[in-house]
Amino acid sequence: MTRALLKTGAVMLAILIALSSVTVAAAQEDTDVVQPEISVLAVKVPRDVKVGELVTITVTERESGAAVEGASVWALGHPATVRNSLFSAAGYSCLFLGKSLGDGTVSCTFSMPGRFMIIATYEGYGPGLAYLSVKPDILGKLTIRAPLRADANETVTIQVIQNRLNQEPASEAKVWAITLPLCPGYGCDLSSAYSQGLGKAFTEAATGDLTSLMNELNSYSSYLGLTDGNGELKHVFTEPGKYLLVATKDKYVPGTRLIAIVSSESPAIQEMLPQLRQRLGNLWQERPLEVKPFQQHRFGERIGVLLPWK
Image (cartoon, rainbow, N blue to C red; front, side):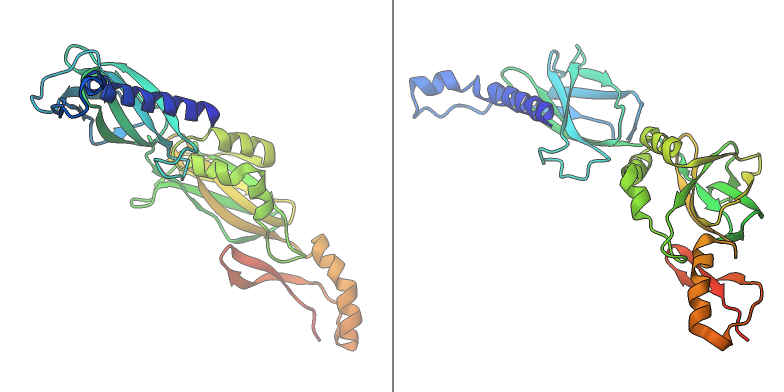
């Protein structure tokens, strides 16, 4: 952040110098003299820009529209993953884009999405300002179709869709499974998984940058495989528990889905049985347990137990 602040300060200092260099000398001779207004630069930027796209910025005189050669062009702003205000110090980026050519243009590319303030300075002119929004280079968002619940050792079909409007399947999408900790036998706790950096990684992935998310998935999840031409992948979960399915594909926002894998042999359920037998007494009847979902909540289905009543 210190470097960013220093760079920001340097640009602002350049602007102040450009503004003050014309008026300082005359002001020293006679403070009562009213100085004429100086010419101001104008900056033209394209309306829609994507990451990696060649951007042409044009610097002209505002009054005459004539091209200005040799103007210094800067970009100040926040990447899209930083939620601070554009004018907040935290998260600032400061990029020198170059000097304008004879036709007043500067060409460049942006490697990350965000909102940027384009500043042009030239000795003897007031600075020119324009705003530029750089959008992520993404094609859409993935959607995962899978059952909310499945039995352990059962074959589960997972399908990934890359266009919800026409239900186009996503072939060669990578599918991952993150094991989520269970509350004693029932719900799931997402906080532990997100504390490992997944929350920030998913935020960055929403802008098209999958780097952090792939690092997190490689460290804390199980890779299930690639989808076929129908966008499908079949997998057998052997361990009961709650899993967060994640689908990734280049130039797409990842898709997620929760799935509960249940079994009457679950350790959490088996730990409860002695206490239940003691409390129920004569009402308890020995017979195989049947496991089924019993309560709906915002993460899907919670795992329940159908008790063996008489």
